[in-house]
Image (tube, rainbow, N blue to C red; front, side, top):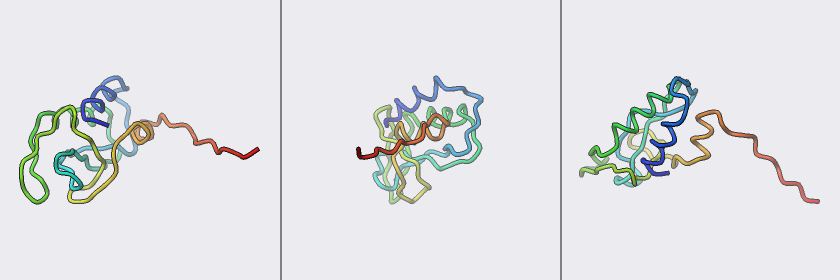
Length: 110
């Protein structure tokens, strides 16, 4: 998911919803400094996550081993603690965070 997509998605969600596992504290992603990572955060509102994402847009972050990297609406986003690699934030993970997931149905052979 791109940063711009993440922002648009969070903008249409219930802002006062508290999610048990979300994100905050944006930083340059260790796996690729040109990408953006957010720290995992517990019991955080959608509004707080949206604020973090918007503050990261067009901001410059220091890479883990140096350099400066600007985050745009086309920057890929990840969930990772600072200095560690994590996983990409996509529709499945975001839906899970927002409580909008449905159980995966097993496919049974007939």
